[in-house]
Image (cartoon, rainbow, N blue to C red):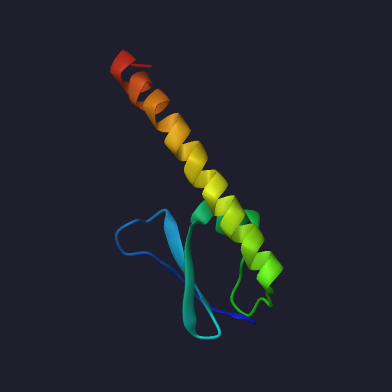
Length: 78
């Protein structure tokens, strides 16, 4: 399997869509894309994609956990 296209999402600029073999495969945060150094024409396998999806879920969980703290920080003027 090969990554054939990476494009920024229209509404969420911090996310990208990944196409594998010319078909949409997944949407992920740009941080995950950079962590795994994803590039067009890169060969990937199912295990690698599973690792990417796990990293995406970890990223979502961290954002969810930290969101109240960022909100509190703004309210306190920090």
